[in-house]
Image (cartoon, rainbow, N blue to C red; front, top):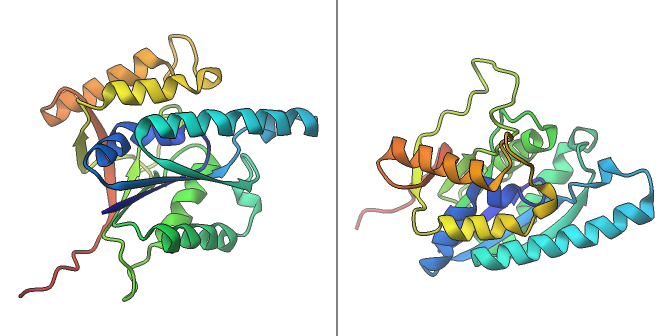
Length: 229
């Protein structure tokens, strides 16, 4: 079994699906994270300062993914400007990752997220995983990203409505440990991106699913390719 997580920025993989990735790894599955953008260049005017921060953030991402039991690859799409890039370019990058890792399950952002990079990442992933005859992808699921999913402009067509819940009770501490690697991205209470809020959010979703802690997902596509004997 192989799992691929497609995200826009470093730390999205932990916020949205960290516990689930750790659970896949614990169960012996191959887990890979693809990060499409550095997540920081939009904050800097100075190229040298931006490059230095990219290196630091990629180091944090490697440490975080290591704690989750995942490998990671990086790309250089422009931060907070995915809408300035041809969608096909992002789609082809995701297709290359799928070809390299042959995942059974793919996780990505929700299409209704406030962040434009998240929205475009989801669209590119859904396009790259379209159910062709030679595809091995069985499931594509969208996750919640705190401070992006719940802050979106509310519309009837973009609400995050989870259909699948993964029990991460045994992996919650691994998720928190991985998130601590992104200390510069964390905020102080009250804010969605705090260790305390992330923990409580998992516990609330867990209560709704009848477990101690859970991560929620909206199933975007599922293809059961099992053949009858």
